[in-house]
Length: 216
Image (cartoon, rainbow, N blue to C red; front, side):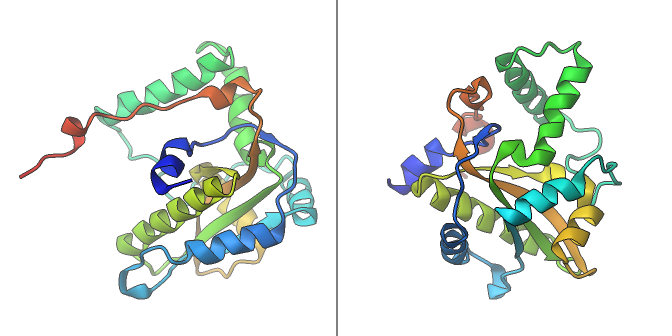
């Protein structure tokens, strides 16, 4: 698989099979992903893997835990166009695939709650960063995470990056034992897609080149 194929095949999987992914596989992917660009070679990502027995403990630990104040604004307040419409459409497309109409709020909330079970994935990691780091280092996280996801795709493993975990920073910090000066950025579900589940047929759209790029 070349890079272009990995980019085009990668998607956010929201229903996983229970097939395990070994710690050694995840370790190899993380090691190679650490070659991602990082300004000044700061390498600000701090990763905590939950897998196998620790995943079972984590699911028990979370239980019916109440949502916390978000660690950061996942989306800007008062999101404007064209960004608002893009976000709205992907939600409608996703719920449409699994037959949940807009007026069925309880069903939509139940689907949203699956974020906090990693959509059934057998493995995952949490990505933290020290609070003193600024926007350039946060952008380094994005490059690291994308590199990991493309490497996983090459290895036949599916993923889902999840900023939704920002509403459980205190709980996740407590479970993984992260220092108090680290902030949770996101989770990453890791496993093998359930290709029979209709939600995994979702193919998000991208704006045409002329919308987002200008050759000066």
